[in-house]
Image 1 (tube, helix red, strand yellow):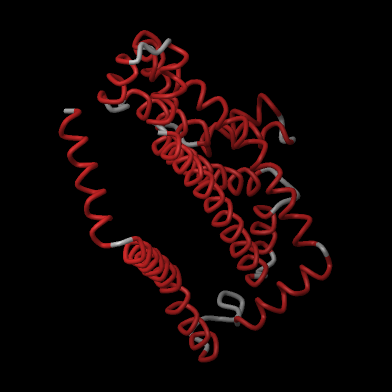
Image 2 (cartoon, one colour; image 1 turned 90 degrees about the vertical axis):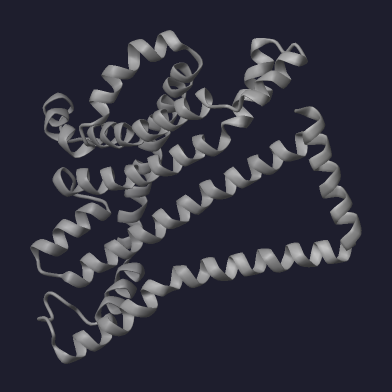
Length: 286
């Protein structure tokens, strides 16, 4: 196996040497630019299609204005809410709730997932009950949580944490349990201690699935936030959705939806950036 890996690596080096550093760097840069352009194009497809349909539909009165407000009205409402500070206040409250709930849920999920991935005994005892609990969506826990915790901030943090915990724990467990055997054999060859094996082999080898779980957990955290604020809150972006719907202020509803989407997208990109840096660190350290 080692001879094959060595031969593959030598073949890549020979190929890079044959094409020259300028050709290789130029090809890598071109490939990176093309990939970024494709990603941007896919990102803009939906707005490029939806915005003209929205403009035409609102201008021709396909739906009543109370149901389909004009884009200009939504922009006007957005500007007013930004100028008054109302939007920043509600967005800040929701963002704080997500950060706290996600931190609690993701932290517990990492610990639980690592325990299940590293220990067969823990996995056998914990997974059946954990799987059963995971099948119940976070929204279904809200009535019971209200009875136990009331409708204060603790309720919101607990519901968000539960929503984030499940995907983080499942992906962490799977990532650690499925570390390539070849990496483990390398650690055994160098006679790593259990701590060294965990630090240098298991954790670096399971970075991609762990971050997949974190990104899914963050998405679930935002969904849980909106759900719990819809039912038990007088502040936050979810509350804006409820208030706008009750008053038939659909421009306010759309503003809240846009802000939730932007913040969720930005936070997901932040996690993706951290993952890329860790992957680069792992590659550089080899």
